[in-house]
Image (cartoon, rainbow, N blue to C red; front, side):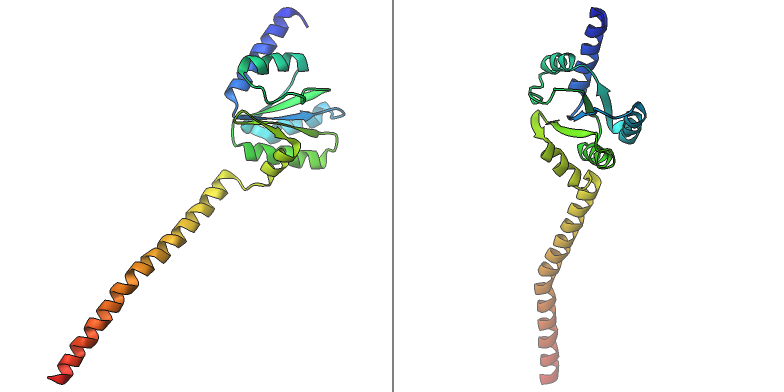
Length: 173
């Protein structure tokens, strides 16, 4: 690879690091080109799956200010740069690794913090952002309904008491 090509590769990787909210580092040793292409398709627009030399990746990470990849850039490495939901990307990679045992999850980073392989798998076990938001909205709706009923109960009790007093006065008269 000529110096100009290396410089261009480092610039491209640096942009990917800067424009991604997270990244998942994998070892792809033994995967075919068709399998890597299938993984890229499965990731869709949520991530860019890039294969690059480890030294160039390390230089790009340093230029982008990413320090969370130390020790993860050994052997044949590919990185999924997350541009969408991190949980969705982690699920795709986890599921792909289940079906293709040659894909090894090494870890990654999210919000500047390092992730180990187990962290990526835990992320994959989470519900998607939309599901979590709907669960939270449902919980809030239930709490608001209970609060409204709690506030309304004394008013209803006072109305029933006033009605009973009025009826008692009418009977006494």
